[in-house]
Length: 107
Image (cartoon, rainbow, N blue to C red; front, side, top):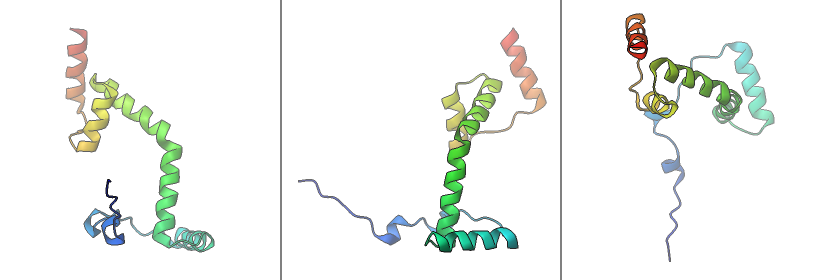
């Protein structure tokens, strides 16, 4: 029989160094977050996380379009561009690099 391991709360939480930190929101947004958290029975960090996830879901198609643009500009497949960003190997193209890529494509 396969053993199912349940992670403890400490194991489930990201390490402090892995947590996303955001700058102060400003009084108006901080107040809105506090109120939204209370009426949803969540902590402010938990509600902020839920809001950020919801916004990213809304923008997913647009994000994918932008990654496709960057891939097209480099002449590489979408998946390669996506992986480049996730692995930290993505770098902006200089105008000279872009011109060189265009020259290679027309030669």
